[in-house]
Amino acid sequence: MTISSLLTTLFKPNVVPNWRSQTAWAILRAVVGIMMIHNGLEKLANIESFAEAYVSYIGLPFPIFFSYVAAFTELIGAPLVIIGLFTRPAAFGLFSTMCVAMYHHIKVAGLSIPYLELSAVYAACFLFLAANGGGLFSTDALIINWLDNSALTTENKQTMRLEKAYTGSEAEAAAAK
Image 1: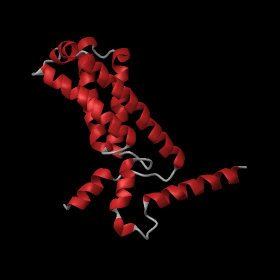
Image 2: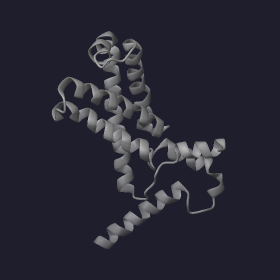
Image 3: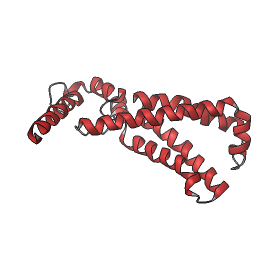
């Protein structure tokens, strides 16, 4: 596997040329990313308390270290998700922290839906982004366009797909009237 194919695999998002779904995808990235930054800042505000109440409680070794890992995963991964840069690895890291949070919630309260729901919703959002990438309105899509020099003249380019999506939606709107 060459460096170029590795980078293409890393950056290439799934792109459905539908501007409505791509806009919703970008909004999802922004909303869950902003909320995750807040969670990371809360952890750093009192890292010892977080380490004792959460990390030590589930039995992980080196609770202060893993507390910092969780906080910085959220503080670094969330902005990357927001701008859609390295979306898959960033979202996978955030998905992993949410899986640990769900484990903590189950250990504390069993399968209590009210206690689990927020971390489960976050986990589902980050799993979606880890599987699908940042979408058409992401920095990853811009990078893959730049890397994909072989397709400059084809209609396969992401930007051309975006133009077709807008053109198609305008035609659909005109046909509906």
